[in-house]
Length: 256
Length: 256
Image (cartoon, rainbow over all chains, first blue to last red; front, side, top):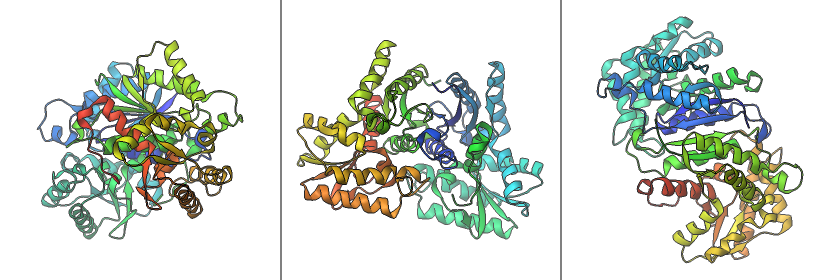
């Protein structure tokens, strides 16, 4: 039996965990099945409350508790390093609750921090660019989650609150939101995405961050309004490979 | 914590397990993340020998032993019903070894049989069609794995041994084979796929079965040479939902 593996907390939403898994595979150097890395994906969407709704006070229980429990189960199954396929789960209030569950259980699991990895990634791969425009949920926006990029000398560019509300709807609207469709993306959601990217560009953004895994899933392009796109799920996939088996990490090629 | 879940044995290859996971999600009736079904994907490609190579006598250890160990681990993590994202793993010699591991460990896990599910699926969804053309690996071909479809009153149509060798290369060739490419499918592999489908049609096939998950992954169409395609991974995804939470199964629509 495989003794150790990479762990992926999915279910936030389910497609995001699958997307992270697919990127883990696509970014691994392997000539056949057997050379690929061992991983487990735990997708328990029914147990983890909506992260944005928690931040907005619409639900009471901190989703971090359930995420922590999933990570513990994953560690029992052999995971030694893990990632959460959800930006909003990294908001301090949620992330800290996750870490407390692990500490209380004397976990030795290494949990990577998706947002910190994005900061390092931009620094390494776009050394000349310092202004990062953020495309994410309102939970991520109002929490200031991405302000942490300043640790890597990056300036965070956001849209206005009104524009953010519209961007959020492109992900969550029951009619045209990305989460509501079994696959594909509505023309309306795509319009909003382009409009928001254009606004960020006008505000000085030099690189765009897909700061919600719903975007990672559904928009495969690596350029938006002429700016390079950094996909948080792709960054996390590469960081997991690097942590588990650095020699297996493919050289970075935008658009792969 | 989620008490029970669906289990997916991936890693054969890794992309097939991810594809099965994605189909599990796309075939589930859910209006938001929380309504989706809990599942775990265990992808340990390094531990499971190549199924076709085992059937051909190129490797000695029965991959069923490792698959059985993965299923036991999955059951410990809460899985109550499971599927293996690999046709060749259902060859009796391998499948029986899997089942022996489970029996020896007093497992209560329900393992669905992908090929039997394909038979039931064709009977239900294509009631007027009785001749099924098989597109799969040489391991699947020489084992006669799909002859089991006769239990559902279906006649199995195969290509010649020479044509089968060419079809196998579309999956396994180190240069143009589907397994060798991180994503996408080579023009050569696609040509072979169409050529083989045409041959099966001339031999009387009324429906085609993608009997290798490599094909499930890379060819999204539901018609090939004018014949409806039954994707074994899609069938297994739907069978897993039906076994775990039948009320959550989407009505069948070809091409979804």
